[in-house]
Image (cartoon, rainbow over the protein chains, first blue to last red):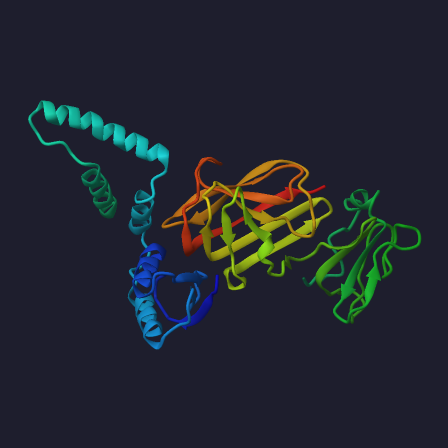
Length: 125
Length: 210
């Protein structure tokens, strides 16, 4: 697979949230990957096709504007990628809650509602 | 490495037992490129000013010694550079996967892939960025053990990988194999996901080699 690398030098006060930055860069071009050492200003970006001027500009802006990494943002990325054991626990709890909710005449909670609630809770911690 | 004060870290009798047997000479290389044997004709004295098992590397003032980053042991298998990290030149064949999965690592993705050896002990470090996974998914990325080494003892170390989130994974060394198995959480059984320039793996482990 061909690889085209483009170096960027961007000064940030705080490291970007890696996952958020990757998502933002993938909106610029869907094959962009990040090569970056924390504590440095260098972001060497990789993609499968040669870089256009517009992509370079947009990628630079994505690096500049990416949200800072926080404990909450890292936790939310983990929530979005729960391993099987965590999924099993949460889905079982949802099933049990829904038994009670339906018995009480309340609508069942969906999995997406539960995951959103967990992500939102993480943001408050 | 710079050593001042006139002594290298094998002062006294502590180092002597460790170099008996397979090691037949111990040398350091000075900044000027001069090789200095630390084992004199008697097998005990340094080639510099020293006595017994105390070794003094002579410097410009006759007392301080300065050597470079390398520390070489001349063993039965030849000279082993054992005093510094050795970068592994990029070779796509060093990156494989179990089954028919393909771990596609380009030269620019290899930020760290280096080792440090001392006799049968190898420190291995890697930081692979923005790599891709194709083919039929499986649960192991495989990184070749450098220097042609073969793993002597099975062990497991925690590592980190990124596929949409940084997660703790595991690196497993299996005796007799020539690669380490990089695995997701749960130490096997969980397949990696297809990815394009978005799989990251980094870690370090100590291996016992044959």
